[in-house]
Image (cartoon, rainbow, N blue to C red; front, side, top):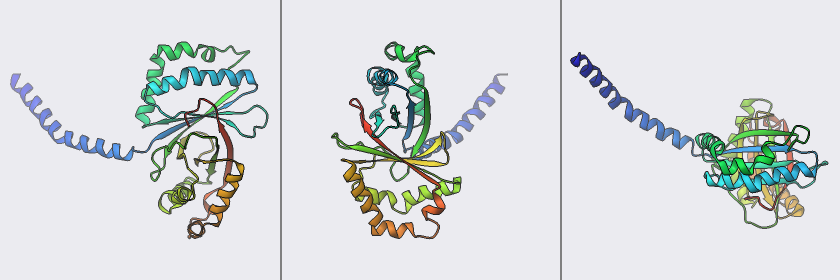
Amino acid sequence: MKRRSFVKASVMAGTATIISPMISKAVIKDNQQEAAEFYELRVYTLKNDIQQKLVEDFYSQAAIPAFNRLGVKNVGVFTELIPAGQTRLFVLIPYHSLVHFNDVIIKLEQDKVFQQKGIPYFTAPAIKPAYERIESSIMKAFAHAPKMVVPPNKSRIFEMRQYQSASEAAGKKKIEMFNDQGEIDIFKRLDFKPVFWGETIIGPSRPNLTYMVTFDDQEAKAAHWKSFIDDPEWKKISTVDGYSDALLVSKITSTLLLPVAYSQI
């Protein structure tokens, strides 16, 4: 019996000796592949100022401090520059990885300070809800822009653009255009001060990609986009066979945003 146990232990040890380096290599490879950040975008539909204040108080007093304690930095909160009625509230939350995202969810449930300060938001009654709906998306950062870049802290407007594609193949091709054909580099060279680029992996209106750029004001926005359209390099890559926006993009939405006072972006 002892011999059998010894043989079994020896086999397991030998197997571990073979598998361990393989696991280590796989972990290293996965870590390299997961160097890109993940972004959670929450869009709150609100009906009045009371709801807006309740949600904003939740983020300024409870959520953002809790996120920061858990290693989530640079949480952005934005209102619409030109709302159609009550503004929607946009919340952008960056995570190091999906593992980090899951870890944050678990620890927030255990964070007594967060839970206590969030009571008005969490327990708002059905007849006076904190918001009408939340629409959430999870995005993975592009390979050529794997980390969020926070712009200088001064008065500015943000533009969030979403490009929807008719097929997943077309969506991947458009991302390839940004990553491999130099489209991201054009934005950087023309000083759009891009904040992030993300492929939506979970969320509505897929397949799509979303990115955020910034400007001093509306006049600067118009000037920057004119310079982009007139840029020789953009004209060159946009006419490469297979990379025409007419083939790759079925719908573009643009939302102009203003950061709230406590936004970390």
